[in-house]
Amino acid sequence: MSKIVIAGGTGFLGGLLESALLKAGHEVVILTRQPRASNHLYWNPSTTQVDLQAILDAEVVVNLCGSGIAEKRWTASRKKELYTSRIETTQFLCDIFDQSKTLRQYISASGINCYPISSSRVYTENDPYGEDFVSQLVQKWEGASDPLQSVCSVYHMRISMVLHPTFGALKKMSTPIKLGLGSVLGSGQQPMTWIHHEDLVQSFLHIIANRPASGSYNLTGEVVTNQTFTHQLAKVLKRPILLPKVPGFVLKLVLGSMSQLLLTGIKADPNKLIETGFSYRFPTLEEALNNLYESK
Ligand SMILES: NC(=O)c1ccc[n+]([C@@H]2O[C@H](COP(=O)([O-])OP(=O)(O)OC[C@H]3O[C@@H](n4cnc5c(N)ncnc54)[C@H](OP(=O)(O)O)[C@@H]3O)[C@@H](O)[C@H]2O)c1
Image (cartoon, rainbow, N blue to C red; front, top):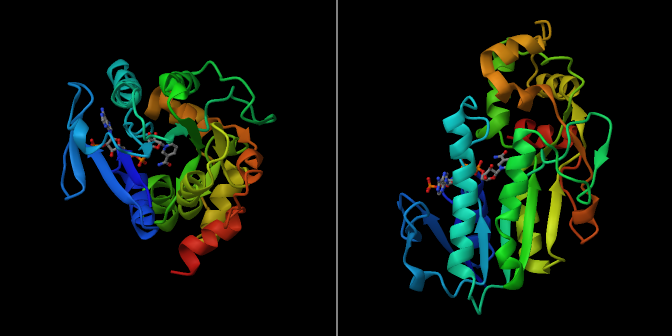
């Protein structure tokens, strides 16, 4: 059993991870700006407030902080918030733990959309970052934890779209399909990376239990096109896709530069984590969607 601190553990992924860690017998403390439970501890990275004594003996720190990339249009102030909520929080964690004698692992959420936009190349963790907004955000986010490299093992989990039937992107995608209003986006040929929520949680548990080498790890099941994803989801939901493709310019008008998330994508290779002994329970989209919808 380890003492594990989760910064930003009150959200979608934090809730799933907390349950799994408690089930595995770990002690979990959640850092949040709005404590609501007995294991929640108030902190505020903007004002550098935290009760140090309650967390300084942590053995593992998981960082899941960050306001939602796809939640609001990317105005200048929103872009600043996307940066601050990731980089300021990471820097504060570095300040808190830079002298730690107990910390053995720092595991941070990161994004798989950190590579140059391409629908043909399959990226590994050795490839460079891209130049677009999200890639640059991820580069600075990952780089912000560099000071901890001399303290403990540092992991950046390059997470793809996490599939859960009632939270996150899949809920947003399934609603129009259930209403008979589903359609393929743009050309439909843009790649989509995704991971079943159970595999996501198990990948964090795997890192904690097996302590592989520090570094970045791509987290994705088989990569499919937007067209394949949309039709596979419609099939599992037993609904037809009747509407024509939504043209890219319409999405650009409605969403501005954030339409990049829907109209472009990358292919990433998940083998680095698999080679450390991790195995995906749901490696194919068909297996993942069948599990998420048909067995419930
Ligand atoms: N969900 C996905 O499909 C997905 C995919 C790729 C990457 N990720 C990344 O994984 C992380 C967790 O995702 P999620 O879906 O669980 O997000 P979420 O539900 O929106 O939760 C985000 C957490 O970040 C904290 N937070 C937000 N802004 C903050 C700020 N300015 N200062 C301090 N804390 C702040 C919140 O904590 P309090 O409000 O309680 O303080 C909350 O617990 C995020 O960084 C996200 O970018 C998620």
